[in-house]
Length: 74
Image (cartoon, rainbow, N blue to C red; front, side):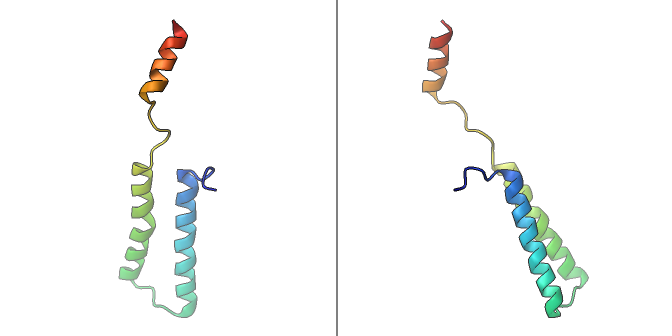
């Protein structure tokens, strides 16, 4: 199910979700102050930035894959 989910899609989903929550809050009458805006900005930026740094690409090769590649070359 999550095979096609990559980092950029996950960041986009996170940002869209937070924008929807902010929009729903604004429509409900929640006051948008400087403190609330900075908290929302931090909530939009910090988790995706951490996710992009931590979530790596393909895993490194195993010992068996390295040995198999060397065996094929010889």
